[in-house]
Amino acid sequence: MTDARLILLVDDFEDAREMYREYLAFVGYRVETASSGGEAIRLAKLQKPAVILMDVEMRGMSGDAALHLLRADPALADVPVIAFTAHALEHEQISHLVNGFDAVIPKPCLPDDLVAIMQPFLDKHRIEN
Image 1: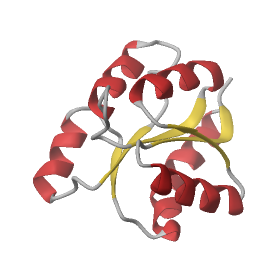
Image 2 (image 1 turned 45 degrees about the horizontal axis):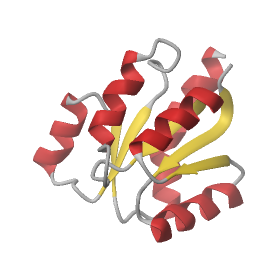
Image 3 (image 1 turned 180 degrees about the vertical axis):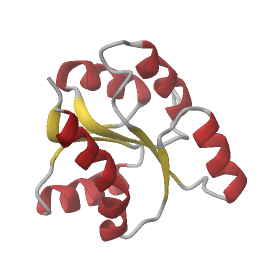
Image 4 (image 1 turned 90 degrees about the vertical axis):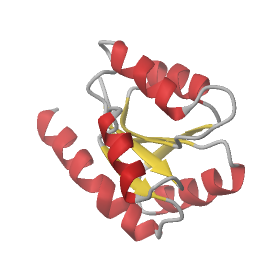
């Protein structure tokens, strides 16, 4: 079963990962972090988060590659995956959505804006479960 309060935050930049993890935990979410696409897939299979915030450009496996593997797994295919990226010009956002991300959050992002963009996905998950 998916944990309605668990967010998986994936970013290869440790400072960003920790800053957003601390804020999300402060406002009441459980947060797991991963520093790579491969680690994100492993944790998602173990924990089935309500939402995955995925950096797109990471060393090793990219966020796009990880997204495609998550979507191919029937147990994870319905988990919303939000691109959390500095590559967020209009044409890049469109590309991320076409590639299968559920939404795009530009980095840097104010913590309150992050929660506001994620909240509809968390609310939908809560209603469905």
